[in-house]
Length: 213
Image: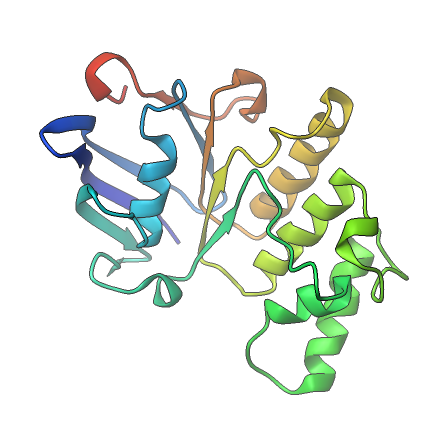
């Protein structure tokens, strides 16, 4: 399973935010994209996911496991996302948030998978808890597993650790990166903090004039 980006570019009117570039991300690999605020990092992820807002424009080909995703709507691309905000539904319990990630399948099977996710997140017994009662790290774990329960074929991470304190960031990086690698999900992480990049992983940077190197 590979995520392949071919000649991707992001523009705003006549302004080129990101120059055309290509990238292949292997199964289980985490590639880090770095750049200053406003350089177009989040816009690039939105284009890959299929929901780039106007007036921004993106061009290029996005393919996953050999399938061209460029003309597909976001819900048909099989791409999961983690954001700086956990995006948990406040009116649903922790268990209901996890069940939301599984749109299909018998209810008992989905309940079993939800409880297995809670156990893997070290959150057994939290099924009926409201999201606002959780710590930042707990919310990040729930958000990750809600995404994983949807069985994504690739993952995009938009500064998901930015709001966590230093000690919690370290543990959450290990937790998130470990689960994505174990599932062999190709992943692209956007950040402006080099400490977020996994040790030994590839780093690409958006430089002057939107050039990606």
